[in-house]
Amino acid sequence: MRGTFLIFPDRLPGVGLLVLRLAAGVALVWYANYIFEWIRPVRLAQIVIVVSITVGLFLMVGYLTRMAGAVVAIGTLASRLAWPHTVNASMTEATLVSSFIGIVAAALLCLGPGAFSVDARRYGRREIVIPRRSGRP
Image 1 (cartoon, rainbow, N blue to C red):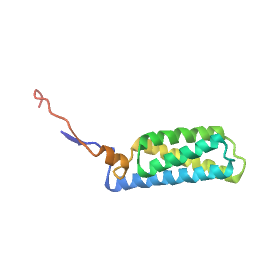
Image 2 (image 1 turned 90 degrees about the vertical axis):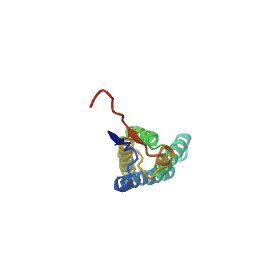
Image 3 (image 1 turned 180 degrees about the horizontal axis):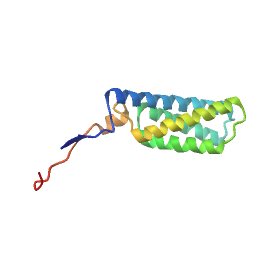
Image 4 (image 1 turned 180 degrees about the vertical axis):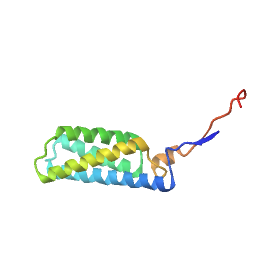
């Protein structure tokens, strides 16, 4: 019996994961820019901005995708709980973008990076061969 390790799907599913990663990364960089403009750059805001941009870039290129997805999913959930009530229309937009980013990050956490990523180049596609036992047919 032969099987293939499917954490790095190629062809159309790989392109779909690439588009999903790019959407999450661009949205994270946009969100970091929004935080920079909306909040006066205090220490916590600076940390959030740096982490958002770093993790967004990691997601765009597919580097440490599962860890970056977990950081984003937990971070967006925490930011959603920190600002439960929106004050104005622009904050509502940021909350919706944050929720969107969290959902996409959770999907990437479950699906993996795909074939068009740094993780696929680092770890490579491997074929798993399950040997037959000699006593059983």
